[in-house]
Image (cartoon, rainbow, N blue to C red; front, side, top):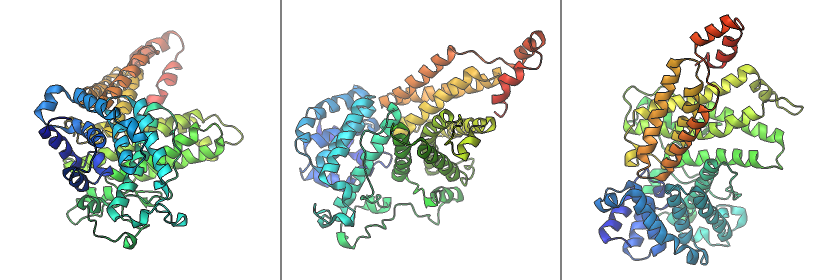
Length: 474
């Protein structure tokens, strides 16, 4: 166990709103349990391993963020076998923390293993039906305090979100099929962070827990618009916790559908098309960000654009792969399969990445202080950097190639800087480099001057139109 002052400093970061652990464990309750000696070494080590990337302690900085994380993870994993033999909610919290810590170390396959174990164990404990009145109260969840039940909900939803994200990063279907219809969404942040446990469990509105941030009189017009965003007529519940949850619900359904060999293609087509329309409709009412946004406005905007990029990265390749018409092709997919439809899909995807780049430039130092959730920040850097690396090679003019090249340099530099704290960002950097290297082996598109020379020599008027058509709108 580290020195007492290091332990104290690391545990302080449980209250950091940008830390995913603050959404899974109630900070005040966790601190009270720690001071009362009710926390075992396993959960303490796993918790501290997650918080290293936020640390400002000199000893941690001297050791190096990744080295310190690895040391704590190595100590925690030695205690994991005993925890697996004693299934409990507390051990499930520690296992999920260990999964997230492995994610910071860039070991996504190991992280996926622990997140899957967490979800399976929670299913065995009956937590996934805790709010389902049809199942009764055989496990005694209704007799638990409000705070205990809320922590259980957040543990289930947190495991679901992490498992979905890891599936996305590893290009696989989610390993554990989880039915969350029996678990209510987490409550509003103001209720959670207060940690008020005076409410009687049975009097708490079980199916009407407020899960969105209410607009405040002091909110700017832009912030009020952010909080009012909806998906399919329902509030997107815009805050750090629920942005991740809504991404997980949509992303998990799509990943599972497109990866299931037994799935009916027409049904999957309709699912993906519906998701595509949901994301488009969700972003449509968002106004332009102010020229000088506040930190809160910028943070929430980046979270929204990161979540949308996660979804577009699943939706767009699938729609491209399904554009060849066949007997059961839905009319919407036939329209998307047209030349104009494909161009529109590509334009929307690149435009979403460019919008994220524009916003990210205003928050250059954010990831260095860990003020963005690492999952979303790392993935959006990877998607944008890789996309722009391909465009930097294939764009039809030198001006565009240079412009895309500057974008690649920006995301590569940000990833490299943030990788000092979390190797999840190194994963993003490696992906950007891999795409750039692959693009070098592809035929380079020619600029207008070169095309004119070829046109006059070989096929007047033909090549320029064919090569430049897809890029005309950019």
